[in-house]
Image (tube, rainbow, N blue to C red; front, side, top):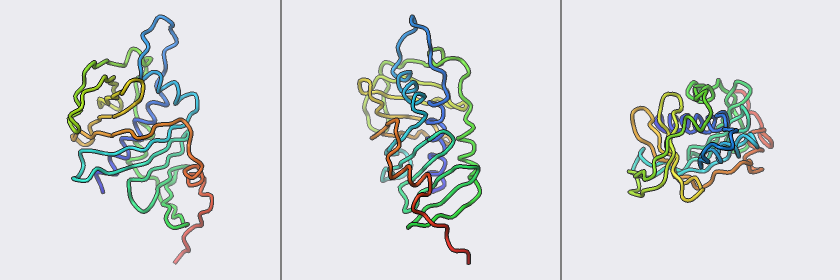
Length: 201
């Protein structure tokens, strides 16, 4: 579970980075696939994704996450959801929420250091990148996020995998969904709509 929390924080850092990276405005600049993802993220200010995590345990874990400005939603494949907003963390389970201190690993995700140069100058193209977890080879583009290389692998223009290093271990995220709107069900959770605070004991 501790490793899954670190992975969740790393995923959030990647999502935050794609919201904060500066897209290039020069018409003469090459058109990178990651640049299109970044521009779509910045236009809406929102990211919702469902990913399958390889490299942690025998059974790949399915995670869901959302970023809406400074608000974050995470589900690590557990029975409960986690919402981070207003400098606090809310654990949601069975119609109730419990308010807690903001986790330090997600704080670091929200403060991810991203390149100050525009995205075109920071992207490196890898024409044939082998994804060790699956054996597939894909076109990829990499960028440094918080001192770590993050590799975005594409199937055509569609983001298919994200490969990053977490605590010295390579983690592969199969991207089943990456959209720039937050489903109503998830938005309601972020807003704590329909949830009551756990009774004090």
